[in-house]
Amino acid sequence: MSAPSRTRHWAQINEVSFVAGMRLLFAVYRLLGRLPFRLMLYPVLCWYIAVNGPARRASRRFLEQVRRHRPDLPLRTGIAGVLRHFAAFGESLLDKMLLWGGLFPVERVQLHGSAHITDAIAAGRGGLIICTHLGNLELCRVIGRQHPALKLTVLVHTRHAQAFNQMLAQLDPGSQLNLMQVTEMSPATAIVLAEKVAQGEFVVIAGDRVPVSPQPRVAHASFMGKNAPFPIGPYVIAALLQCPVYLMFSRRSAEGAEVSFEAFRQQIILPRKQRDQVLAELAAAYATRLEAHCLQAPYQWFNFYDFWADSALDEHHASH
Image (cartoon, rainbow, N blue to C red):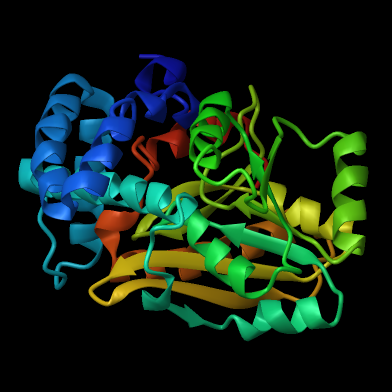
């Protein structure tokens, strides 16, 4: 079997099909509360899991890989684990709508390491924030409300992601989360981003999905005990912008939610001769931090495609 037929690129998996009924469920929550929302959510989850084989299998493979890597964790695999995984995704979608609708209890969000960002804002310095598909990116709006000077530009790679965020933006048209559709880093895009950072703004990009490209450039690093591809784009962009780099992680918790910021690199330099080596080291450092946070909440990592299969799929044209 040829490599392209073994797996699909994550961008081919349209996550909007899962959230098509979220408007109705959101209305249920507003009228009746979270318990009725959950009662209606599970039939939707069962239907989606039944009809979406690739996402179901990807969830199971991820949970099984985590179990092999950390057998001490109280983690369910099989269909029970898959159902819990997608239930966490459904809860996160509701939280997104609540955040954008001004209904999320922001006082229950615990911030860790936010001084990294607030100090930069106070000094008028911009930077690059590498996020992940763990928890909710929109939780960074909590800091945005506390610091109106914080301006974010989020780079997205697919039209369906943009469409879903536009649906959320209808709940809060004044949001400071700006989306920029980017399929490749052109000189014009680099200039725009450089101007934003020079003005003290922050560019946000995910570090845990390979780019949408016929020949994605990735570096391979160990993740949950198995080699996986990670995009080199965030580090190349940071080198071009010559700005500090931060990591952002979020997750739901029993108390509400947590958002953690970490200083990653003050500056990234890619020497011509050691470029591939440096990129591999950066990807490995990011993968280590991603794994640490995912192990705290494995059901909240929402990459419903075969994360490690892409390593074999793209290895013949990867840059590492």
